[in-house]
Length: 194
View 1 (cartoon, helix red, strand yellow):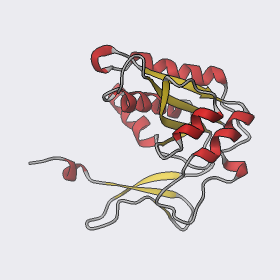
View 2 (cartoon, one colour):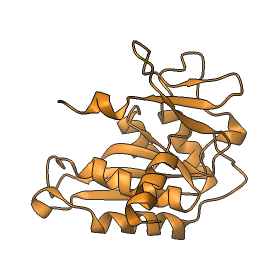
View 3 (cartoon, helix red, strand yellow):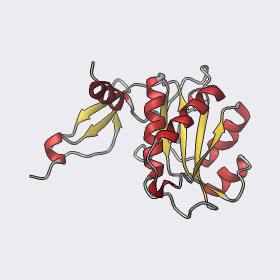
């Protein structure tokens, strides 16, 4: 398998998971290894202003969970139940003493972390819908660090698959009859301007 094929395979497996096996921990060491991947990412102006709050204890995970919003397309679902909640989180913050914004660094680093997690069999869900002040308070994050994203992590307790987006179909993810989360994706031809 070529490096390109390996990367494509990881990208295909790297899906947002919202239900996790809470009996399998993700260690601090693993979180540190995932954050280390960000050191090798490009950075606008090479400022490298992003920092990560590692969350892996049961108490901190429980304190963080109520501040998060889950799966906006599932209107009748309040998020994972107690036995299916994430066992770890990475809270991505910008160090405002270094820069007021991070240009595109946040997305590059989240993709690197997500691909690294996928390579380890760990699933994630990048969350932008959360109460910033409640997250900062729950985790005692110093004021200079402003949370941008929360990456929920754990071993998957659900199946997720990519499905072709049919013409005139909806792009919203959904669960099929077998409770598999389906993620419609546009075709290659739809992405290319001729």
